[in-house]
Image (cartoon, rainbow, N blue to C red; front, side, top):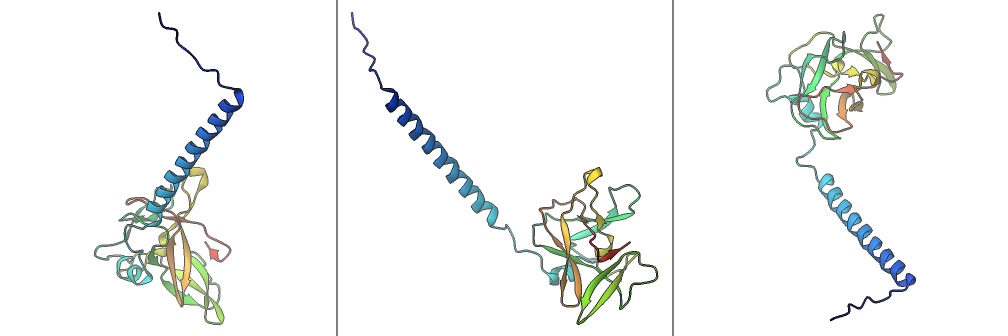
Length: 184
C-alpha cells in the first residue's frame, strides 16, 4: 500500500504564490487592453475633410456622406443621417445659409460665427437646395428621448461645418447641442 505524501506549504509561501498569480493575470489584462487600443487607434480609412464635406455632404450629392430624412425626434421635421460609418474627426457637411452681420429679425436656424474681425450670423437653410450643405438640419440632442450629441460645429476660415465627435453607424441620425451662439 502506498501512502500519498502531501507537502505542507507554509502560509507565507501560499500568499506569495497567490500574489504572483494575480500579478501575472493583471499583466495579461494590461497586454490585452494595449492590443485592443492599438486597433482602435488605427482608423480603417482617412477621415472626411472639409473638402469632402463640400462635395459629398451637400443635398443631392452623388455618393453622399450624409442624407436628409424625417427625424426620429417627434415634430422635429427633417434630420441628417449618416450614409456610411463615421469616425470622430470626420467633417461631413457645411452649415450653409445667408451671412448677415446682425442677428436676423427671424432668428430661426441662425448661428453666430467669427467673420474676420467682425462677428456675423449665418441664417441657415430652411429648405433643401441642391449643392448646399445640410448642417442647418442637424437636430439638437434630446437626452429625455435618448438621442445624444454625436457631432459639433466647427469653423474653418469663413466656413461653418459639422464635425463628428463619436462613432456613428450608417443610418444613424446626427445630433448636436446648440450653444449660446445658436438662435432658434
